[in-house]
Image (cartoon, rainbow, N blue to C red; front, top):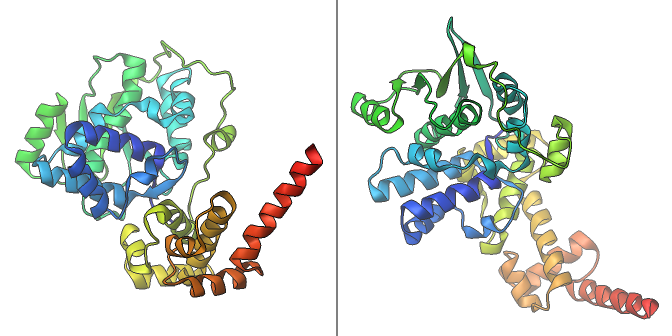
Length: 347
């Protein structure tokens, strides 16, 4: 089962934009509502659930009374936040090639999503699919995506370029009028996916300012350069969530299911189909987290157990030994002994 995820490069930039629109306390409440926190902003190259980003923006939008907050975030979004993905797209020789590059490499920033092209007699409509998404706040991300996609057009056609129209899924007439005023162009409602209309005659526009790079960017090299791998299986998605939130406490099965915008039983069935259980994944992640703490800090075993999500030190010791074959104390001692021997060898 594929889940729609968002690269933390985008997530971190969205949070910084929201911080400039609403108070930090309001954004923090939005993060809490989404089951997230600011620890995800610490230079991570990972993914969060698309549904969680949607809940964040929706919560902030409700708090400040802005039903087009997603569009405003999209208008402020800096495409360069996508790192080498942006370089790959914006170094294309022409606009048509750039759009195709963005479509092919989308899995690096939005695993589980897809860029769709629809051609009319005069225009190419570039959209991002939202199939199967009914999560709270997804409308904000739909609107924001329009302006992010349009930034590729701005690079080739100039900052004053405006699409002939945008397309959005069903929306009330008064909301459409507000969005038209904000976007400065026509809005076609009731579309299958949010999309940007680009004239066919503009697709051959030559790149006026190719982004320079010391590395020859290819689709094959991008994943390594970005130090990420797309998370497509349910197990990988669960591991990503647990690892991302370990610093603020290990979420339970119900919380993880909520972040994935599915029910607990659906999560259980998906994991069972992949031959693993939530409990097994959680143990794998918590023991890995504990190993890192034992190796790199002098935190007491009691505190390591607590941070790893165990109710008491005894339960932690039992689980750690079952997983590693060593007690936590012996594991830490063996690391110190090995480090000391290596130091003596280097002298």
